[in-house]
Image (cartoon, rainbow, N blue to C red; front, side, top):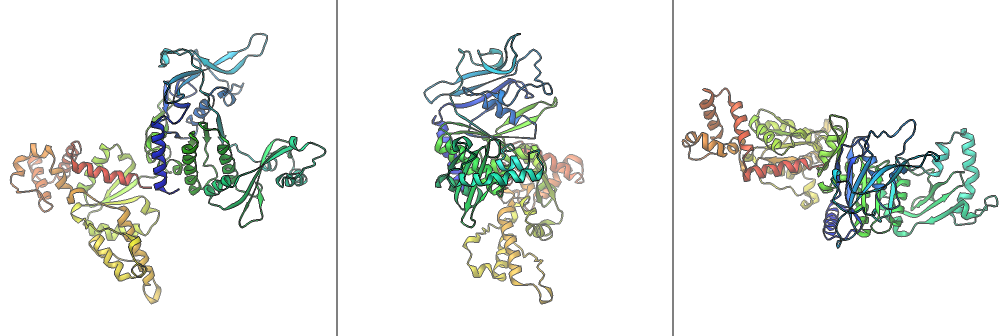
Length: 591
């Protein structure tokens, strides 16, 4: 699924949600007192695919456990229970949470409180991990109503860190000596092979259905698994069995290029995806799907494909999917209301920030995951106006704005050209040139013919039209000189960098022109402006110097004047400011 189709699917799902298509949908969950979450933390589920983001130990899995225990017949006590080593301390206040759900578009929202209770007596062992519904508690912010029954919803919970195949359970986690483990796997493999072949196992006189059962995945399911993993599978079979003493799952898969292999030779990511797709395809409509770190052992491309699959499944089966993750690929492109960022306050408790951009989420949880973007500009005035605008956008912390004296020619030829040739740097370094340098050139690589793409002279002309100047090349062809194919490769890199990374200040203006048009300047320095017929790129710098003389008695404090004027301009509304915000937002959203 390409980006455009993902966007279309997301729009369709949003419209489905607005029209009340998702029955028995959990709209929000509220934690008056639960584990280490800040009391009265609320999470809203405005989009049917929700991703919980945060550092390890920040409460994401605990939130999934609470959601697991929300529907009728389920309890979070299956995951969170008290032991002598890890007792659940409750100092006068019971652990509890409540959630709101709607049965269908014709019904009002219902709230259900789930509370940890003690059950038992002096003669019987107390059950310290019993959760039951409670009457509405007004002080917790619940709506006044009768005690509602929990939502009727099937739940599928998959913790991908704990998904271990039958082979791995024996080979990697058994305490037996290595030779004993290998002997068990060899001896029992004959029965497993028969099971995979849909033959009678004849395991020591035990009935086959007591030792294991086989599921041959349908062609449609096999194709979905292959699409996520970018492999062409001909056949996938899943065996649930006790052949290795304990209950486990084995998988046998065959591609176009292999005779077949089991989980012993498959990647852990393959097994995880098989189990995930298999369980979701078996899920009833409107089910609640909880996935704990599904990206484990999957490369970024597979993670992106997994997201596409989940969106399609949500659309087709009207599922509600909630994920705990550390994956940029899974949240990239999702609407902000789908992303919930778990953060730590000064008391060491966790709270949830909602409706955050995916880059903000990953910048917050780990600086190394997404380093600051760098914007190069021509001078102090440009840097100041960019920084002041970013600050107004509350995005300054995600950027470093750097200026290089010497004008645009020095900036482009000395700094931009080597950056454009570095794939890693070109992902994080952008250029904001003065607006009077904008050429209006549009580079459309797909429209160029093969002979144009391989013609250095032609591409050099394109470079001149784009940047307004010729650019140096660094190709080294040895004693024979620079090879034309290498020169073309560099020129194309420069043109792609121009298309993706080069921006201009709006209005074809230099920064001084921009902030001299503020209401503040017209009000305070109107007498200075009256000396000029108009403010243009040729006189704007002189006008700022004159204002500096008015304020400080000389122009030595020109940077202080620029700082004040840029700050005043950034606090006003204007179409130029809106245009600059759009450009900076575009940079912020770039991968």
